[in-house]
Length: 251
Image (cartoon, rainbow, N blue to C red; front, side, top):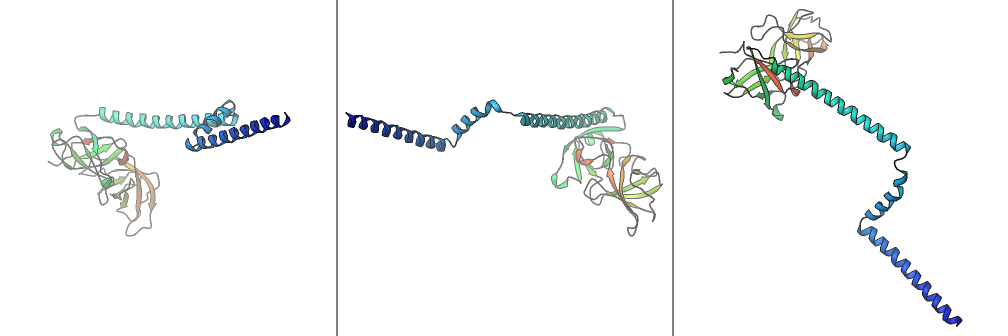
């Protein structure tokens, strides 16, 4: 009787160990086969009551506030840009032709852009092109429906400029960035950072007193003549709409 009971107990113990080992191996196989998905699900269920903690809630709240702030800033910038574009489009007299930028080449980003108005609309080579903020370039060529604008930032592109405070003329030269160089005609430029740069009041090729930019840097010791670096007020890399002044085109 005792031997029979021991045999049954041993059998049950063996059977219990067998199933324990089997279940353990099956669990490991399941975790490996599912790449831990089930384990992660179980883990998430177990820790769900304690998440997010106090610190995590603060982090989440702070992250949401930062995101809202960034989105608000972007929306404000878009709103300002669209308002400028709209006002530029609406402010269209008989001597101005509004046009949208329709094409830009990454290889010639600082050289040129194309707009959706051409000779059919009165756009001719040599006409002045302005954007929100001031002068951006001149019409280089036109087709019946489109026109190509040569930007102030095009390397080698030159035109006369003027600083009213010092009453000094200079030659604005494109450098392939949004900061062209202003080479002064006088040995002493008298220019200072913050001076406004405009088209020359004596210019016969451009309308006088059009805003170009602000002086950012001055080198009085440069040879053969001093120069300044000018930050354009109408950034050509962010222009959507332009106006073409049709009172100075070459017939």
